[in-house]
Amino acid sequence: AQSVAQPEDQVNVAEGNPLTVKCTYSVSGNPYLFWYVQYPNRGLQFLLKYITGDNLVKGSYGFEAEFNKSQTSFHLKKPSALVSDSALYFCAVRDNSGGYQKVTFGTGTKLQVIP
Amino acid sequence: EPEVTQTPSHQVTQMGQEVILRCVPISNHLYFYWYRQILGQKVEFLVSFYNNEISEKSEIFDDQFSVERPDGSNFTLKIRSTKLEDSAMYFCASSGGLGAQETQYFGPGTRLLVL
Image 1: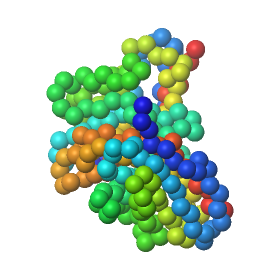
Image 2: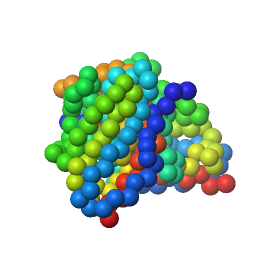
Image 3: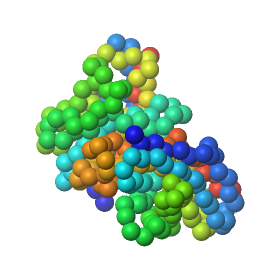
Image 4: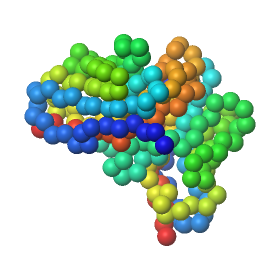
């Protein structure tokens, strides 16, 4: 079984400050981790993913995420937040065991960047 | 940049009616998926489809649901007799491969309201 936890329903950050959106996961096999962003009344946009290799993954719009196997975490980060980053962020996981094709999503974290 | 498209963007129907939600996946993708997001809740996997058959489905995907690829470009989700609890945003997704590392790209969604 695979699962994802996003412990914060909402994160508030001032524009220009660094941001972190937290995610922890649980899988049976090796994890493949994804971040998606959802703007109001829009679909899910892919931001980045971790497959293997370097633990720091860089993605779209200046976002990056750090994979930490010992802490089973995949936190999303950005050095300097923009007001336009305000949206709903979903962490997601698939594992490579059991032939699972579905992506399992977390409950989402609402990011509010304050001007 | 290629993208997944979905029609209609909004659909209102009466309980017990049949609805068909339509999706056009990214043109060179072979793997297709439906997810749903009940208002305020997380995104949930419904079904995956490859080579004209269902390859995985969740417990949500009961006999009221069916999927079809009626031609070379469209992928549809049919709900035979809608219930109030089917009200949700329905997302179509596609991927170029089946492996767990493959990114699923999502459409903008169809908001279904069952009255």
